[in-house]
Amino acid sequence: MATRAYILIKVKAGKTKDVVQALKKLSGVEQAHSCFGRPDIFVFINVQDERTLSDVVITKVHAIEGVEETDTHIVADA
Image (cartoon, rainbow, N blue to C red; front, side, top):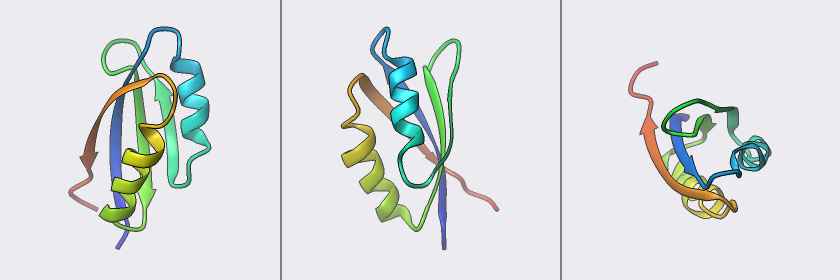
């Protein structure tokens, strides 16, 4: 069963646009939006399972230059 989640991302000042562009290239990312306030970016992702989600967040999102921290929220209902 697919795993859907919102990833809230805090980025370094001046890096938001670059981070959003990099996020949109990641497999499973359906939406990535910069927003006023905190966090800086909201991402909606749809992946195969929680293990894949963990891999994307830890090895791909955290590797993007400018990403300072993430907060992942798995969707609970259909």
